[in-house]
Length: 268
Image (cartoon, rainbow, N blue to C red; front, side, top):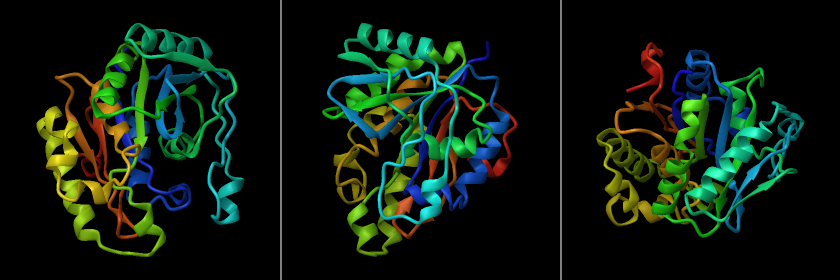
């Protein structure tokens, strides 16, 4: 089995499902180039729990866990099979790594999971299961969570951290448009990822420009560290350019150990 990559995908707002922008086609190219996968394990900020929980539903439903958006968004469905056996194994791996881990047989896929997957695997032909984000997780814990999931990659499981590279929803909702600060933060993160400067990424709040403004709360940044933790020292880091939506939400994403031969515009 070829080693599966890990990914951090910026899902921005739920409208990404209807507005592919630059990132949607890039994810489609990546999806077509991926090796054969046994499953996708997704950590999303929209499922936060006490401890960590792993969804073991054999047929996870599509959760429309948002309000106030256009009706066509609520009509979208993404219904891949689940992976109960692999999910249960992931829960055991997390427990062995020291996490308070358990399973949830009823949890469906929130929009942090199914929106990017609609682009990566539009046919919903690969099993998908979610891993929750503990509500008290910090950056070091997110990195450790990714490292605990890393052995799944050798089983053909894509480890996907789904968040947003910038995520100031107050400014988004107040129609404050200031792309310069958001781009400065996104550029800083991209440079740190390219250097594999884990220490800088862990301590981004003290080192990155406009960090607290880009992330008033941390839950949408932490999945980047999950994907980084699941990667290996020899994995090439690729910037997947997503541009800036609404002049405040950076859609830039990152792949670790992506297969060779992707379209040049998908990586940098």
